[in-house]
Structures are given as structure tokens and as C-alpha cells.
Image: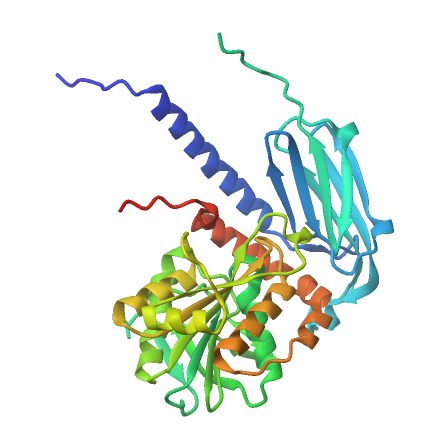
Length: 147
Length: 249
């Protein structure tokens, strides 16, 4: 008779995290598989990075050719922000030697999902040497007290 | 050289040259530095390219003509291996092994990979440090004597790690130069720092002023290569470079 080994809670959690990680990677790859520019809207999608710390979520965005006073960050919902910024000059495909596409871009635009609950209204924004840094304090909705 | 990766020579290759590597990695430091070397060094033309079914099914078009994404540029004293596409984790070993074997067959003096080491809060760091690691104690001593800081302990992940490991295995002199950089954004300033350190070690004079002047243009242009590189870096667990190693003595 075969016996089934009971899995420990740590194994179950570890497997759950592995499957979540795999799923996140697949979603990320699907999202990546599109051009980083939108010809119709004349926008370029900037590179960005989201870091979650115990106290806050920090979103950084690489915005070369951008003036600070044109940068806009808007909360779209409780977990999504929209970032846009004007470039100092128009960028054409020709500038990069590309002749098989036509179009020009003067704006960065993207939407970013915030992975944990945050206080959108307490958002702080800094712009330093072409890098936008957005700080969002975390909202700890559920805490488990240890007895 | 393995059958699955071939290096096709287009011109006569000098022997006894310095072989440099500029591969996509954090901050695209190596690729940006390599691209600047190609534009600065007169006569650094394509001398060989990689042909392999392990590479993604792509070609790079330059002035309407197809090129391999991995090419070797060279002049009388420098060979420079550059990749214009991110290399996937499962092909790094055969690709690097083929390049190292090829370099060895050309009696290269030393192999030097140009790369980066990611730092948090990079946007607030003005003066970037460059660290080095070497394949042999003699090379490490030489690098130290030139005044380059050594990366004493830690993890290294990616093409430069394999280069160092393979060269250490076969006793080939090799150095990896790592400039502090953004993990996920193209970093021309870090590329300039790594080139300054290269000059200290090899006496290859490189003017980095144009690289710094064109910084914003490079950051814009390199976005797509950076995105693809990010995907590959996450697959090869690049963040392990932040880890604190456990040495058991």
C-alpha cells in the first residue's frame, strides 16, 4: 500500500511562491512583447523599476531628454499610476538610422501597477539627473498580532 | 571549438592582442563601452563573427546588410567581442567557451571583460567606483598595483563570470572590470568609468568626452536592448550579486 507523505507548511508556501514567481515572469514577458513606442500617440514607453521596502514603494523611471517641470504623475486607481513627461526635442526614427518606420516622439508615457497597498495621497516625487523617483508610503491593511 | 558554435574569420587576426568583451548586462556598461571603443578607435573593424544555432533567430541589419549579433572587431593590438543582443542564460557557457577557445588560439595576451556591478540608489551617487577581479593571482597583483580596487568577496553572474571561471581553469590571464551602475537603466557614465580604468590597466587611451556628451541619446537609444537584457538577467538570477556569500573555511 502506498503511503502519502504529508507536506510541511513551509514546502507548501515555497511551492506557492515558486508558482507565483513563474506566473509573474510569464505576465511580464507577455507585457514586454510589444513595441516600446506608440506611433499613433507619438509616445515612448520609459524604462522603470518598482521596489517594495517595508515602509514604502519606490518607483523609478528613466527619463532622458526631459525637463523636470513637464513631468506628471497621476494616480489612476488605488494601485496604478500614470507617468508622462515631455522631451526637450522631437525624436524621429531617422535619428537612429531607422528608415522602415516613420514617426516622431516627444513624450514619455506609461502606466505602472503598484504591487502592494499604498497611500496614493501621500505620494512624494523627486527628479534627479533624468531619473524620476516616486515614493509611496505603504498601507499595512492587515497585521497579524503575535500572542 | 565546439561544433555548435563557430567563429568565422573575415580578416587576418593578429596574434598577441588584448581581447576585450562587451556583453549586455547590468546598465549595459559593456555594450556601451564597446560601442564607444568602436567609434573612437580608427581601424577597429569587424574581423570575425559568431555563427551558431544557439543564438536567437535574428540578424542585425547595418546599412541593409545582415550581421551576426555577436561580432569581433579588431585592429593590430585589440580584439573586441561585442553582442548586440541579450544572451540567454542557457547559451552563455557554449558561447563564452567558444570565444575563449578562439582567443586562446590567437595567443591573446589578456582577456578583459567590461561590465557593471549594480548599486541601489545609483541616481544619488556622483563618483562611481570600478572594481576588478582576475583569473590568476599574478593578474590580481598587477591590477592592484595599477590602483584598481578589488572585488574581494561576492557573487558574479553572467558572461563575465563564465569568462573569469574558464580562464582561471585554463590558466589564461583575464580581468573583469565592474563599474558601479544602475541595474536596469543604460548607464553611459558607468561605461565611461570602466573605460578610464581600462586605460589605467592597459594604457589603451580612450577619450570618453563624447560618450558623456551623448549620455542622454545613448540612454534613449539603448532602452530596448536594456529591456531584453532585463528579462534574461532575471532568468539567470542576476540579483544574486546583491547576496552576501557564506564561506565555509
